[in-house]
Image (cartoon, chains in turn orange, brown):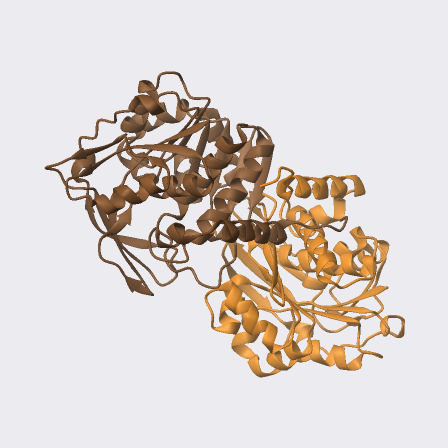
Length: 306
Length: 306
C-alpha cells in the first residue's frame, strides 16, 4: 500500500521561550512525509514550492524515500512562509507572518506513480484544494483522512463541509471540534461531526492526548508526559502522519487497528516537540522509536484486574 | 484491612448551568465514605458536625456500613457550609459562601475501633488537623494518602510541608502541582513533590484524567468522556475514595496495584458528576459499577501490536 500526502512544504521561523530559528524546513506534508519514512511506509507528497526552496531540503525528503514527483517547483515563485511565537506555556502562540506565496494559486497535480494510492491524507490546506485532489485520484482511495483547522471554518466553511462529507477519518483539535459542532461536550461534538460524514472522528487534545470516536465506541490515549516541550510546531501533522502510516503498514482500517495507529502517531509526535521544527524527526533511530512505543505501552497498560 | 477517613462532613449548596440545590449533604469525607461503601471496604470517618446535621444523613452513612463513631456532634454548633456556582464550562467556579463553623476548632478524635486502620486517607482539610490525626494513630498506618488544595498552600504552607513529608501518596490537581513545585512541566513538578516526601504522586487533571508518578515510572489514565457533566462537586473526593478503597481491598500498595486503583477511582468519580452532590453515588448498583469499569477498560485498552 502507498500513502499519498497533500499539504504544505514550507519555511517556518519559530520562536519559543527556549530560543528562535531562522527560516527552517516546515509544512504539514514535510512532517507527514518524515513520519511515513520512520514508519517505513511508501509515501508521496503533492505540494508546491518556489524557486527559493533549497535542493538540500528536497534531497532530504528523497533520501528518506518520500516520492517528491508531486512537489511542483515554481521557479519564479516564493515558498509558503509562516512565522510564529509561542507563549510561555507553549499551549498558545501568535502568528507573526504568513506569506502564502505559491500556495495562493496551488493547482495540485498527482503524479502517475501515486494515482492509485490506497490511503489519502489531506494535510491542513484550503479545503477546496483538498477536495480537488480527491477528485483527481484515479480511483477513490480506500481511506481518506482529513486534517483541518479553525482558520478554514472561519473562511471557507461551505467547501469545508463538502470536503468533510467525503472524509472517512477527520482529525481536529478539541476547540475546533467544539467550533465545528457547536457542542461543548466532546462526546456530543463527535456525534455531530460523525453525522457530517466521517465514520471516524479523532479529537486531538495536545498535552492531554487524543480521543477516537466510532459509532458508540470511544478510545482515549494520553500524550507522553515530557520533562520539556521545546517546540510544538508540527506535532499535529506528525501525529496524523504516524497514524496514517500505521494503517498503510497494516493494510487495515478497523477500529482496533486505529487504536494502535493512535499510539504510533502519538509516539512520533512526542519526538517532534523535543527540538525545533523537524530536527528531532530527522535524527530518530529505529531503536529510539521502538523504545518510545514501549514507554507508551507502560504509560497506559494495567495488568491487575480492577 | 480498614480505611480511616478524615475530612469534612458538610452542607453544600450548588449552582450549575443545569440547576441549583438547597443545602444538601456534602463534604470530602462523605464522598469518600460512600465510595468505600461501593467498593465494599470497611471505613470509618473522623469529622465534626453541628446540632443542625440531620439524623437522616448520619443514618445514610451508617446504612452504607460507614463507621460514624468518629463523627463528633457539637450540639450547639453549626455544620460546615459551602456554596458555589459553576461557570458554563464547569471547569471553574466561584465560591459564594464558606461558613467554617464547627470545623474552626476541630479537634479530631479517633474511635478505638479505628485506631489500627492500615490505610489513612486524609481528605482535604487544614494540614494541621491532618497531621494531628496521623500523630494520634496507635501505629503509623501502612499507607498515608493525602488530598490537599491550593487554599492551604496559600494559608498554611509551613505545616502543609510537614504533612507532605509524612505522606506516602499525595493527590493534587495540575494547577496545584505547579503551584507547590514552581514547575510548569508536570513531570518536573512530580519529581520535586516526590522529593518533598511522597513516594507516589497523583496529579488530577479533571476531564483530562490523571497521572501517577513513582520513581521514574509514569502511568496515565483518561477520564471517562461523558455526554454531560452535570455537577463536578465531589469528583476529586470520590476519586481519592475509590483509589484508597481499591488498595484496602487488595491489601497491596505497589505501583501495579495503584494503576488499577486509579481506574476504580476514576470510574466512581465519573458517576459523581452525573447528578447533584452525592445523589448519583447513592443510587449506583453493583452492576452499574461493573459496567463502568468495563467501559473504562474498553476506553484505554488496545490489542493490536504497535
